[in-house]
Image 1 (cartoon, helix red, strand yellow):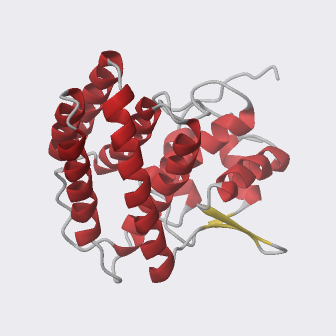
Image 2: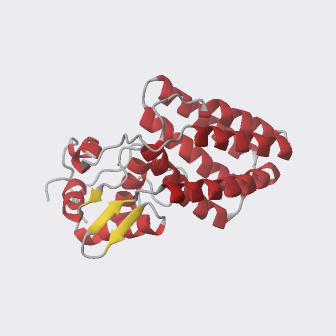
Image 3: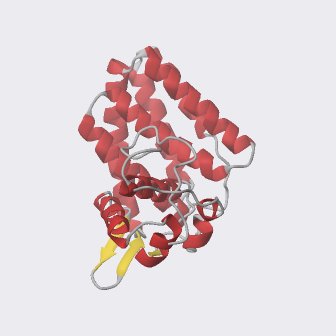
Length: 251
């Protein structure tokens, strides 16, 4: 194979995969990041052969990574037809957003009780990174950081099953936004995120939940049924990996 798998540009703060780990950990993390950044279009065929060439790994490793993504409902494994990025229907989108609201409410209530000063400081740092990404025109990174904010908030809630469920919901939400968001691409989530942190720090559960529900309303209000913006070209999506020089590998 011509290319060697490269680590992520930044550590994945809240997932199992990051810069290090097994090869399928890193492949999983790259694809998950591409979904969060809306660089992979819903319905994109995920060719094992193409991904193996891109990442410089065997098809067995690709299958393991795709299986993990399928478990999170962002990839569909079709018998005898290969894997594709999930393409949620309107009804599925409504169900995901309903679930997000329920989970976000529970996470917010628990975060008010359990979030530590260190965790709140880290959340603020993430919001500043999110704002800076949008300011310099890096919309993909801004969207990813917005999703990671919600995953880090779930960690601050201190409930492991909610973290796992939220990870699936956040990635599915990114696909829904990529598929159904209106032409208005303005984002002010970082302001809403910072207000939410302030309410959590003040231990004001009523205000924090109200702000979270308003935030979800804001996301929901930007959806329609017409827009698609991500790419279905695997080599284009992962071009930043293919351009890097080969590195020797001993394992």
